[in-house]
Length: 339
Image (cartoon, rainbow, N blue to C red; front, top):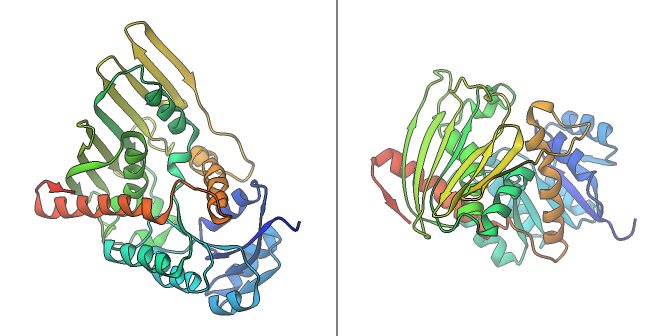
């Protein structure tokens, strides 16, 4: 269709399959080319999704294809180079999280896209899970009164590094990888942080980086928010990839619990409802909420790359990256880091 935004995907690894499937659920965008340094991997994915062109050189792809934007789905060590390559052409660019392997690199990426006048977005899908959006709506309704504390809990017994081997070798693991999601959710739900204190541990000896992190934040609102992350847990819901949240206010509380249930409790009692993710045939049942959230995230990003407003701009996500690396600094120095 003439009004479709033509785009290319850079990277055809583990997550690209779900990203492409989610793009096919969104009206107004069509993938016309794939790049991967191992051409055979790109050819296999192109055949699966009906993508007409395959390249093993990103510059050649950009020279030959007429594109509305590029979606980068590679490992973080390549993000800065590939984002710069696209931005130099003045094209809007979407980048997977974590944005970069360091705060300095993330700042260079945002500044470079700004100089090139290339719209820059980060694919941060976690906040688009329907139960998290419903939790946010309950907070915004104001029935709890001003919040004074909250807890976000993500504990998984899944060895995610078996499907994404580069994670096993990462010297910075759970904070950089899952912390990018969970700290972004904290910002989405509770606003910006003023101070951070963090402790980390490594429970799996085969990993280089930390697989447990506890982050306490003092928010601009005055509330205290604690984020608990672990790939070392053995819990009832440890294989569900669900995020649990509990927030307390002067007049009540809101809880996001198992089975996508959001409950608000005030003096009048408790109101509870399920907010399950939509079911897609391409989604992994064990990651239902995670995979389904890619669709509304992509739809929002499409607005951004076609001239509208999107939530997770590079400028906005840079605030999440700063939180991640403030947490690392706190864990390293065992002190509170002011932001």
